Length: 337
Image 1: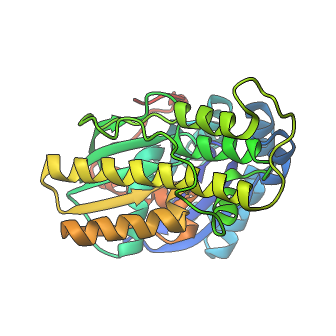
Image 2: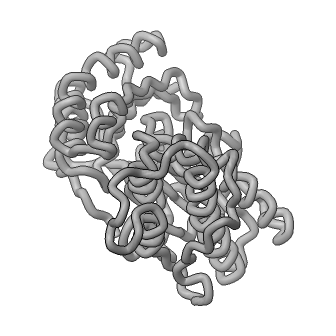
């Protein structure tokens, strides 16, 4: 049985995992940086990169220890090299290349977006392809046609902000703190999702595209007025809860609508959803209702595999089987689409 080490440093989570060529996850360690970025209500790239430098080797060591695996037993090193914050990616790529040279084993270059879809395969414990893939996170909102783990093509994506970024910015507007996704979800739980009629960009358009910048602006105006007449976010209470619930409903509605359009356009009968925003309970429930109506099979991983982690890099086993090894001059690529 071959053993692999996966490395993830694409944004603000430092992660390492050990997995086998049968997709058995022996260990999955994630070191969060949320505390470091909370004062800024968003991820600061320079802080993220420095934290990766400090945390990566201890995280790798912990992953190997938990998996009861020695470096010499590894068959290959897999690393997320695109897309993401370039400084953060460089830390993981440099470490992976160093280990590959030291151990004289192959290096596997892994696409972070593909990994979020493959997290659904890990959770399902069986094949999920072909399917429509929807990745919704702090940095990405994209629809894909997925024929297999190494065969994914883009159907459409966001024209500006990602859905997760919108959650973070709206959480800051409402004074809810960071990370924004869980904070907005908690606040929305007691609110009325119909209290504000926030925009749903491209809802009447057949294009498989997203836009969340206008939605953020609408929430800003609802909170502070068009001329920033108020200087403080709304206090705790019904108004703030209604703002959070109405914003969340707008995001959920458009994500579900575009996923349905992608399914109908491709004729595929499976939907795989990954990324940190996929942890949102309202989104998961709405996607399930839509898939039940459309008679489509839905795959969403558990919360631990929605947020960034290294276990989802296990799709690199397919690259290894096909001999698709990365060169040792592999570079970090911040953009992919």
